[in-house]
Amino acid sequence: MTISRASARLMARASVISCSTVLAFAAQPVLAQDEAQTAQVPETVSSTEIIVTAQKRAQALSDVSLSVAAVNTEQLAANNTVSLEGLQTLVPSISFGNDFNFAKLFIRGIGLSSSLPGVDPSVALHVDSVVVSLPQAQLGSMFDLERVEVLRGPQGTLYGRNATGGAVNLITAKPTDYLSGYVRQTIGGDAFLLQTDAAISGPITDGILARLAVQRIDREGYGYNEYTGNDIDNA
Image (cartoon, rainbow, N blue to C red; front, side, top):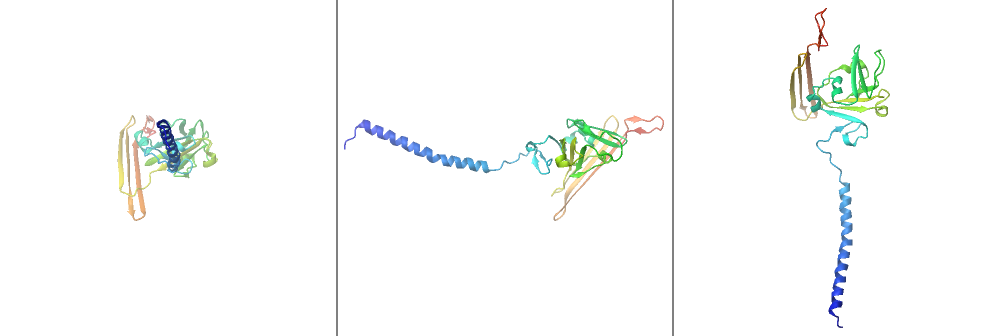
């Protein structure tokens, strides 16, 4: 059988097209499999991502659907935040006051508006998931914290009836499995301040870790009582 040159060229082109089509179809399952394997690989959390426990479990801050503001230990130290009152300069929509030794914490304008004993606050305060219910007990110092979480309310679903305005979670620094520590000294201020913060952490024995943290504040008063001669609002 005799085949002309034109017919031979057409047959060659058809063979090339057929081979290309077969290769294309053969490659598709491989690409789909690679995509499926890539989708199954869990996303790793960036080292700069802040982990919070606002929803009673550890999550990246960007994955939390609540209105949460988190302040880490570096920010607290840089602003010398030693009480709840200092959070006003770090977290929007939070305000703090006190009278008759009652802490009055407000979030979005909702908080404790009474100075009578036995009245529950409208903003819940937790220290390592333990609620501090009395307003008088919320005036303590904050130091050696890992982070502070402020949840704008209402947060009654997870934090109970006293969280209409929101909740503030104080998470203390945990013991480390290696010897570590720090000493921080602060001197200055309009009212002369002498503040010392220190902590040491590490293993005691196999399976037992411990951490000891102390803070000492000595501050002159912001005012002067001319009758008694004592400082006003000293520490």
